[in-house]
Amino acid sequence: MGPLPLCVLLPVTVLAVVLAVAAEENAVEDEYTWPQWKVPLVRKRRTVPLSSPKFSARPQSELSGTCGIKCQLRVPAASLEDLEQFLSYETVYENGTRTYTSVSVQGLSEVTAWSRNVSSSSRHKREVYGTDTRFTISDKQYSTKYPFSTSVKISTGCSGVLVSPRHVLTAAHCIHDGKDYLDGVQKLRVGILKEKSRRGKGGKGRGGRGKGRRRKGDKDKEEVQEKEENDGKGDRKGKGKGRKSRSRRSAEPDKPSFRWTRVKQTQVPKGWFKGVGDRLAADYDYAVLELKKAPKVKHMDLGVIPSLKKVPAGRIHFSGFDDDRPGNLVYRFCSVSEESNDLLYQYCDAKPGSSGSGVYIRLKEPGKKKWKRKIIGVFSGHQWVDVNGDGAQQDYNVAVRITPLKYAQICYWVHGDSSECHVA
Ligand SMILES: *[C@@H]1O[C@H](CO)[C@@H](O)[C@H](O)[C@H]1NC(C)=O
Ligand SMILES: *[C@@H]1O[C@H](CO)[C@@H](O)[C@H](O)[C@H]1NC(C)=O
Image 1 (spheres, rainbow, N blue to C red):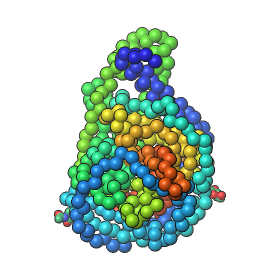
Image 2: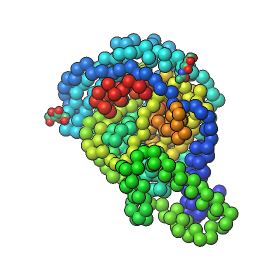
Image 3: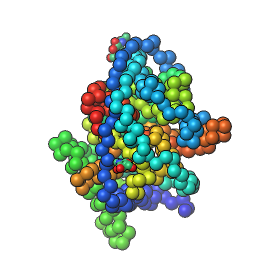
Image 4: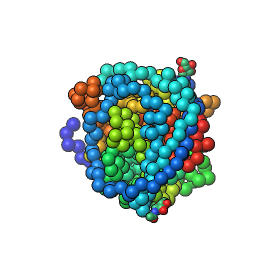
């Protein structure tokens, strides 16, 4: 393609997004529903103060030397004591102090039952990164509506996802390098895409959200997409008569802007720390941030899914803020190539900056007709993985799966009370 003027390209991009999203939504007709899992309980044992961290680590754009699925097959299964240690965690507060909390785990048999349903590392042909299949969601009509609106930017340069009214899930390496906290963590902030009222319309749906409940928000969004898709087709056939306003709007995408919120406290599992998780550290590349103020944005629930291979058209989706498209929300979906209990390997196109994005899938809830999206993993990023444990490195895109145990831990962090976390 030659250098087309921007005003031609942009409407095409918007249309491509709409079609891609719509195609994806129509792809799964199956009645496969969200399974319900009893999850173990993660309980606090005790919390002790630690010396304040130095906050001296530098952000890493790529992780290397992680022990991947194959390598992990040779690691002995973690004992209950190991798991309790990996799930114990540090909390850093905005005043720079830090505590360590040890936890106990109950009901581990639930996990054993769960892991039997995980297809163990079945291999698919490797998908080449070839053409870039990412979509920039530049139109605020989408980027500030569910599900895209759940994606947030982390001030250390990563992405994250709202998993409660005031909690953000991200990758641990966006916070801590395994030895120390990143230098930006003491003043950690989270950016939520701002809706501009320039067109005077965008804010409408949001205003009604409190009353209208979440279902309605979803419906609105789907209606908007359907409408957009039809407009697009009309444009192609009808030569865009009387569609001035639409193309003008598309040709001038709003410059993305963020509303920044301070982080009150940050929790990172011990399994991520050097000398604790060792070859399993990649499994613990997640962290939870609690915001000082709840942004009035709908969050996405967490869920667990044992095997994506068993989900019809089981594609994963995620949106984040890739470095090469500054400030823009970038959406993509792809299928998973390999999976283990704790990791998902895929070749979704992604650039640094999208690390920490919430990986979600859509399924129906039993007895319901509507789609329900749930976060089932955290995008860790591009990694150089020691596949055979012999030092030879291979590149993958890796996401950390939310297992029942991690669900229990994150749920406990979010609610501060594990009694609300019996079922995923
Ligand atoms: C820092 O904040 C934490 C949590 O709010 C609080 O418990 C602790 O006492 C504070 N420490 C100092 C030195 O202010
Ligand atoms: C898990 O596997 C068992 C036995 O293979 C099967 O009966 C059960 O339905 C599976 N559960 C889910 C939720 O897939």
